[in-house]
Figure 1 (tube, rainbow, N blue to C red):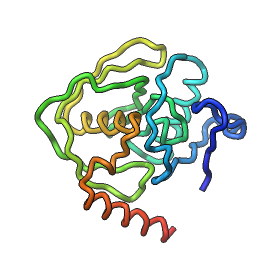
Figure 2 (cartoon, rainbow, N blue to C red):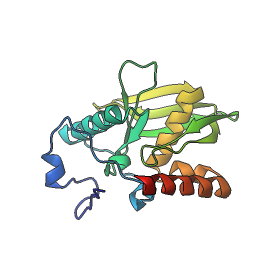
Figure 3 (tube, rainbow, N blue to C red):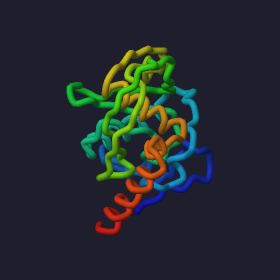
Length: 188
């Protein structure tokens, strides 16, 4: 498994990765890598560096046929994620996203992660949310979401805050899911 190690600023990338094929997907950080538990750094420069991270995210999202992916999933600690729901024609990018409001009513959806392939569990989250974020040009945006769309935002914002989705499960369910994941990894 490829591991990215940082010696400089946490969102700096090694030259070998920066020089790679721009259309190739990035290696995904696998659970239980400690980087998945780190809070991300807010994006302050809406420049070509951010666009490269976003291109890597969308390429990797497409290669995995995933619904969502965050910068930490590809070894970057930038506060960025990409979502593509099944009925969307293109992925959407969320920079410096935060949940500004969430409903008191809850909903349960099946969730998983690109960092724990093959494992899904039901997670209870707010049924509706409002997300404040910036677009790629740094303009403030607001998005209201409900149902699965709301669950996706909460899942990805949790990851940006260093809360891996398995930690939203009871200890018993989390332990079972981790054991299943370990079994899958051993069989590869």
